[in-house]
Image 1 (cartoon, rainbow, N blue to C red):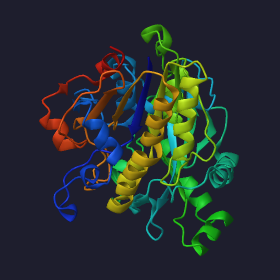
Image 2: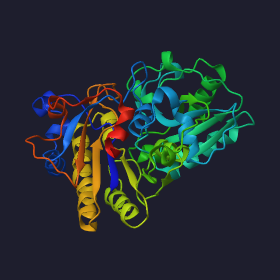
Image 3: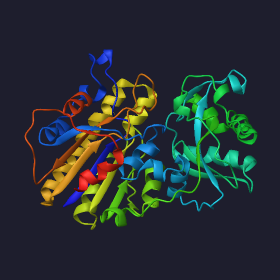
Image 4: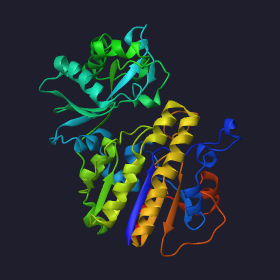
Length: 398
């Protein structure tokens, strides 16, 4: 038996008047997910433990079978693992976004316009991060390049300070969300002074792109210690994601990462490449389990774009899930396939919430016969509710 999870990050949402009181998931054309739902178990799962923030970090740990209350030490340390940072016991890792701030006000009165600087390319981000590091990096503060707008700061002998994710305060004045630590705050302010007049940003302005004009620190934490996935579940697993967070969880869990060319975490990622890589890993590579993570629905939720979130969900349906099903069916391998989001990213708030999410669990050896579709309302109406998301992996493997 082979096992697959296809995770549409932030795919769940709320009913929207513009969609006739449907969610983007229920409005989108998803014939593959609906066909699977008709012969699958569907239900709702709480991926965010009570009292914890609804981040992709806690949610994906939960889906991966790791109780966040036991294993979570912060988001950035997981990302640090994926980019090869060898954290010391007294190091603190901090997520370092390159964001777009408004231009005319004093720094503390600016607003966050875009948490991703128009999904800046890694190549452009490297140039900007190097410009900041040239002045601000020292033995205490070290910058590390990640992917797109997502990067890492290692603070030697640092403190796990409270910091606010930029996507939680989009469109808001930043004064009350700036770091309380004086050095971190000064580094953010100085980064704006360095980046706002950088030649690359002057070119971006000419092209009509959002300026990548400030660093934003968040997600502080210490070195994580995850149990081996293979020892925990007796399955050899592989991660397929463009996002450093997910790659870091895989590294920490002793899983392999497959890098897919053209996979970038955005709307126009290489969906087909991810699907084919998973099928090949399961049918030819000796793996038992594949975790396919697609970031696009979450990014479109943060952008507040209903149309593009629907497009991301439809892409997931036809360009990932369909290809996985077809590939596994053609291989003759028995398999179980689970589809779900990690958390909702509602268009209304443009950030994550802690609400439960719908899951779909298909077994190629024992398909059911039901009259339902895959969406939030029908999953909730099924009566299946899993209160602790980290038990979901046992459900997949049982």
